[in-house]
Image 1 (spheres, helix red, strand yellow):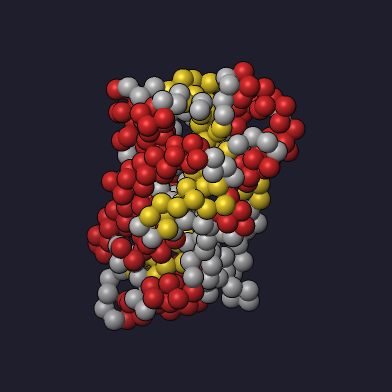
Image 2 (image 1 turned 135 degrees about the horizontal axis):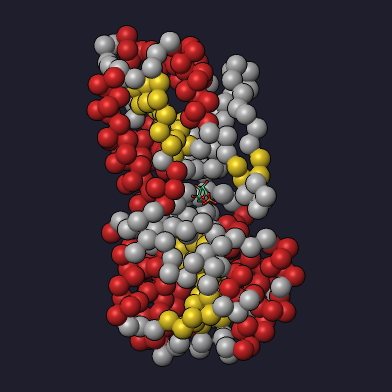
Length: 344
Ligand code: F6P
């Protein structure tokens, strides 16, 4: 069988490890050639293809962050209108199937294409860890380790200046990074999108620390956090940019202003941003991504189209794409309550 592969959506540490494992397994186990498409779905539509070989070059990408294929987001309407071009690309290269590595939008596209006669196997990726159907996505562990390292470092400077320090991490709809990084690095408060925050409660926790003789407080905030209604704090409106991407409000900065007013204290904000997505994947992410790549090759040869490779417990399982895209995997209330026992 001949396989095409693409990476779409935001990049994520571990994408190259998936590509490497897919190419090696397809070549060695099935004698299957693999063709990479550049910049996500648009590379398939416009037929921008690069052959990928199991050689020294591909071997070395295991450690590399980002994606050697480039990535991009394609409007779903453009994708559906481009079905004839996608068919032609597959026919031109005599491809039997595509492996699409991406998040929610990519996997929805994979489902739609499979329903329309293009066989696709999905590989879930996101640093946010919010794709349904899989226990973990690769990239998440790397993001948590980068964020934890940053928060660890903020303890000493916050203490020296007796400040409240707000650290904004990624997580538009799910607070997994905030929860895991906050717990790992001993943050004194964690704010996630799943549980609207009361700014007065955040101040109360911080004030209590100073009253107890502590010199500083650290609060980790997920970028998608929102205040409870009636708490006296509303966020500036977000929106979408000219590409249709969500634009965030800078929640930590706005919280900092509110805390400064309420506590009359020095408050500083650190926004970690895309640093969380950059650089070498952790060993955990390299392993998970590699296993996903190996199993994606097997899945293509079994004909498991319209499905994703997923981590279930310790094993890799095939799961219908539907399961991945129908529910956003958010932080359950009891997990947040566990963390809340340590606030203050
Ligand atoms: O979905 C992954 C993610 O890193 C989010 O956490 C973040 O909000 C978003 O991507 C940022 O996307 P972009 O790279 O388009 O700014």
